[in-house]
Image (cartoon, rainbow, N blue to C red; front, side, top):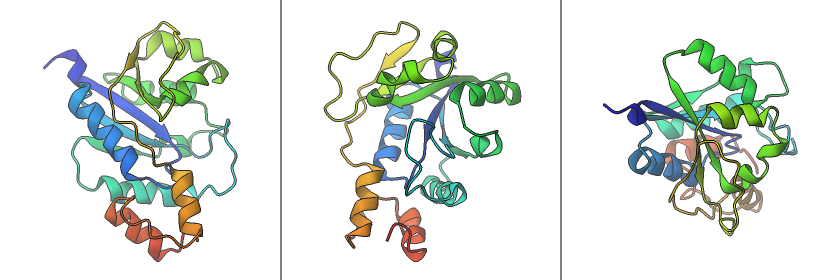
Length: 195
């Protein structure tokens, strides 16, 4: 088995809620970019984003677990929920390295997040020590920054759906069942989230 196959991709996000776009990106990176497994890291609150309309982290974690189901190469992690707030990726990475010293980790992020990388705490250390797999976001693939480091631009499909679009649509009483993995949608609907 090549070293590349052993890399664990870390897909950070609020997953508020998880949707088929997240699952498609994870699947594409596993199947076409050689990552061995994908871990979804549920973020309590991104310091660069507004906190309004953010569902409780345990509920988002539960929806992700329902979405992942019994997939052997996907894992849902609550590691950031156990770390001091605010949550910084560099701290999470250091903690993961401590817990899993034999694993090689890489980050997964959208091209829009790559643009904000210089605002991240200790972003130079992230670039120096971790490969970053970048997937394209709609209308955001031109003139991407060149930070050096180990940035891998992937051909993952550009997914137009977003969690904010889904939340707004649910609030407007639209049926979003085909945007969200079935088990996660059924739980979300039963709990009346975002309505």
